Image 1: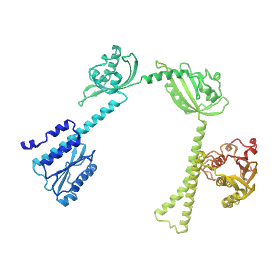
Image 2: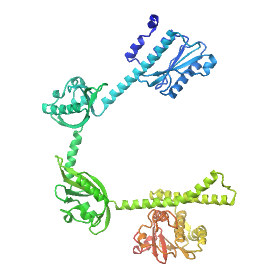
Image 3: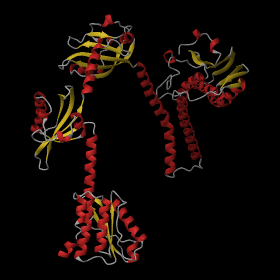
Image 4: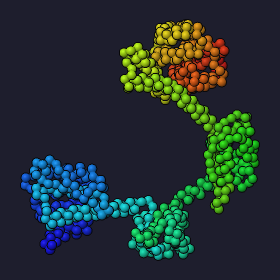
Length: 636
């Protein structure tokens, strides 16, 4: 036993204690095991550093390739192991079979049981002597100790770096309120090195009245055993007042005994100064581009004491008509709104809130009002005023309605083709459909048509988006008008024939300056709409005529006309005469919006005239608008 102890590498623990780099320690363990067990191959693979391994001592007939394979295998095993592995694992592999070598892998674990890596032991005759086995255990323990100590030092250095570079103060105090540790931020704010702070209390840095308050906060934390947050005011040596936000918490040892207090603090002097200025500005605001109203919270019924010009412009009321009254004058008789309950509750609880209300201007017109309330308190914490910021969100509400309509349309337009395609694929999946049969061919044709319809919907959405963003350029050229209309008829006539409609074209001009593909797209859309909304057996007329400097185009149908309340938004995206998802005509409401964008990109204008006897969609291209009386054009 004495000889065995003499063989123990006492210098290696000293290297570990003096923070010698880990690779050097592993090398020392390697050299020691080579000397003690020259016939054994030991290899170590660390979980967080695969480049560190050792195993130079080896039987003469193990080649470097064999040895490298041992290290590679150890690294793979390290990655694949988990916490439930046994103390040792025997791993047969090709080297064992080829060279008759016995192998064993041992887990390298920390004192807490976490896996640090693996140590492999290989020998043609595995060590069976107690001394030899003990040396292997020592090597294993030394590597574990070195790795764990290295990790602890790295964690400590990292924590010290984090704390020293943190943009806030971190301190530790003992039970006598003396500083036991401070970070660099505390040194900077105290204008003293840590050596002049540690061991001292607040009495050594502040006047008695301030020190008593700070120590009372510390004592509250130690007495209650609970973390607390404080806003503390101090004066530094120059006499300047500083405001600090501090979070203080108790510190306990492993037995749960209170040993001191920790603190984290940040200088909020600048924030306090900003808060003071903002408070003064809020009470002194005289004008803003945002509609603003200030009510007196100290008086009964919150009377208005100030409105800015933006409020007058939004509501139509003058300041004299509003001062002294409650803002409910904007509600009119529309008092049954859930948002009003939230508004009253916020006032009662003296807190801010945001609601969107239906309000009414002085002329009775409705607008959606997004109201943001902000309470204003005095320095004693009493509610004094309520400031309201108002924004007209009527247009946003309209867009939200269009969005909802669009979702309903998309759901309707996509459901039918997707159901058809899904049904076809389902039959194919279970081999219950023969595509060579009449039914199979018909279903395949239907699915193909549905896919084209889905592709068209996507193309329309992308096309509209690119047009709205200005990403599409018109390629205008002189084009013969009559051939263009004849091409239109060839495309649209089959659809018209289904409804027994007559399509008539009138070209009163030889050539027009247009992007032919885009204008053909517009005409197909307008004529397609006319067919959808015209009874069978009627006539649709398409004409183009020359007007000074340009051309005027018209598509006239004999349908039922368009309701007057639908005209204003008829060229808006997703707008339809009948937006119900059960409409029979189909479509997503993008076609007319695309037409509007294409004509606008040409520099022209599009409009519609309608009556109970039908509708006429007209558009003029550059030069034609000047010949059309603006009074004759509807207000679109």
